[in-house]
Image 1 (spheres, rainbow, N blue to C red):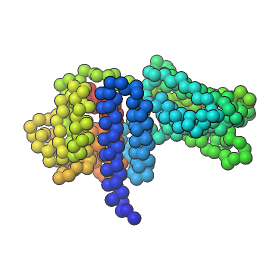
Image 2: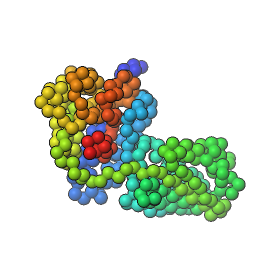
Image 3: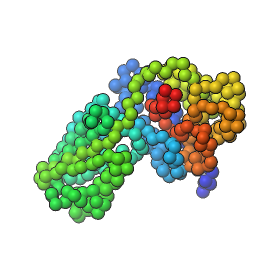
Image 4: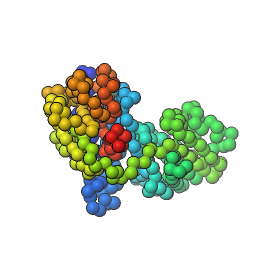
Length: 344
């Protein structure tokens, strides 16, 4: 039986590995010439990494409210789920996708939105007797402030008197000989947690249409004018430190690096960067101890604290010093969004 300490270390190390994978994917997407041929494969790796990471977070730690949520492309989730179902249902269901290539991202947990779409698609499949079709469309709404997902099937449909009950926990659109599911109630709960809405239209013998509206993430414009800003990256993993450096340099930041807290303090004696990105767990001097030293020395600068294990945030943090907390694995766009927020 592993101790609590060893479990925390395992979660930390796994999330460091996931972060390395995700940042490598970001670099590949920027560097591969014929990206269209490999993008589906990269998206599969990316989505699997997110799901695995969030399973670890949900199991082993309580995430601080300071930890940023991810920007997520719902088209990728839809395509991922439909690829899986196409293999299983190719003789039964004709999937028709109309996905807006300029669809804005949403902010939240990857696993939440995965569950929403998975349950809606599963519900449509189970409503179809014999062969049928499912159409999925995405688009931006309200001057890009919201996004919409519409899932339409030609299944058995729902009687009008039951439409108001479809999102109740004890209601199921499945065959009544089967155990009632809670899929649609979960969908509504998740969507409402993100201040979104879900509605349904249905006609018996014709099928059903589920429509979801969610708030869009703030749009991050590519290649902002950010030259002249300096960032100190404190990360003990050489590969991850190099990946982050290269990614941020591509946005015209000047990058300084350190492998532990002692090196951070030595660099601060020479130069104060515009931003510090520091890992929670490092050898010789960890991130928390380093932050305490920074506070005592009177240095003032925005700081992003990163960790591979959410349970590590249970300890007391210097709240007046830490600007943002980011939980590994994070993708580059997520980190860049925080950087832009803090130093423009």
